[in-house]
Length: 50
Image 1 (cartoon, rainbow, N blue to C red):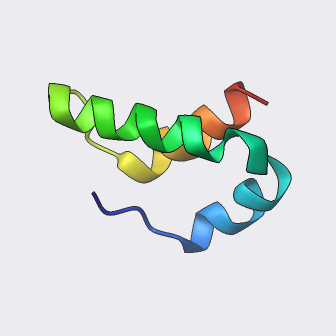
Image 2: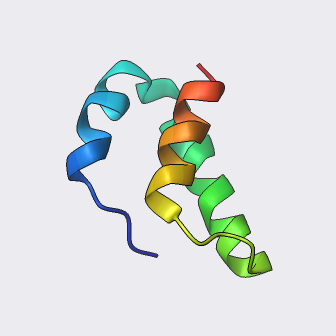
């Protein structure tokens, strides 16, 4: 899994408690084949769960 870290830095700082769940969601989405943008899914998952 590759996530572009640059746009994620502020999100990770602000929503640190949601990072583990967001990573799990991205991994699951990639395994299921429905994720075309892991970075965007990661950011949105962090924010939505915050």
